[in-house]
Length: 320
Ligand SMILES: Cc1ncc(C[n+]2csc(CCOP(=O)(O)OP(=O)(O)O)c2C)c(N)n1
Image (cartoon, rainbow, N blue to C red; front, side):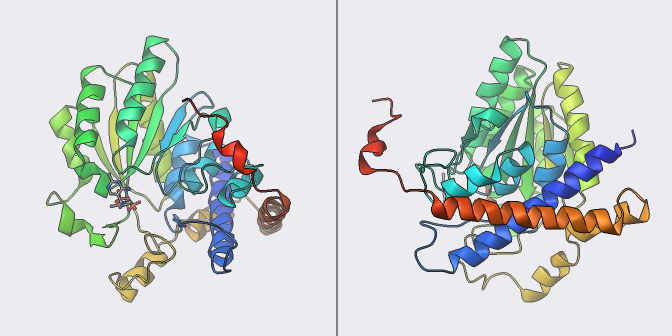
């Protein structure tokens, strides 16, 4: 099925927003004391979040992981509330209690970001069970890295999802590294998607730097899931340009390898295709880029001017 122009524009916008948002974070992190805690970015991998979320409906849920910015932005999270949260401010989407690593944006059906590697799949299965039980026409997407697929929880979750034909899409962003460990050092199978066969569900390998291919594959998986045909495991081959976190010197990533993957950047690929097909003009593209730069600038201003929470607020919104 041809991809509607509106969807292509949505993906281009998501890609540009995630990239600009994280470029700003890269700069901000280098200023002592500006942002507390660890900073984990998905620069280079944005086509996965952009393409998958463009294939979803508002009622669909996403469960994200430590590399969450592009997922949340593409699902519609407010950049101001996200930026303020990353700064640890009270106006953040989690009142400054999450920081960058545990972002939750329930209003766009992104109820949980877990940094427990492999923690997402069982949560996604629970969410999908609820969707099935309530007979909702909705799916849950679980974003995980390649390293997470070696956790026992991943395998238990795939088994149960398959057994109960749950509406889950397991999205593995294979960015070639889990921390400083290269893919071949932690997994013998050439493709993560091959593991789907063990759970009698489709396993698909897709170019994760091609937003349109990401969109198409996620749309197919969603259609299966809402038709009651159960889960799909999609492996998106991609690459993280930056270190595991911003303090990582990337000594284990060959410079030529980084350069080769940067040459397959998802943004110029989609941009060139849309320009060539006349789906966007040079002026409209320029306007989109300026608009996004202004949105990110405004998000930073908002975050910087917002107050930190008071110490007593640490005891609010807790269950015990
Ligand atoms: C259960 C658990 N073990 C170890 C860690 C430390 N840790 C955080 S991220 C990470 C690497 C995860 O790699 P992968 O799943 O491939 O995701 P990526 O970072 O590449 O996006 C590790 C080992 C953790 N957070 N949770």
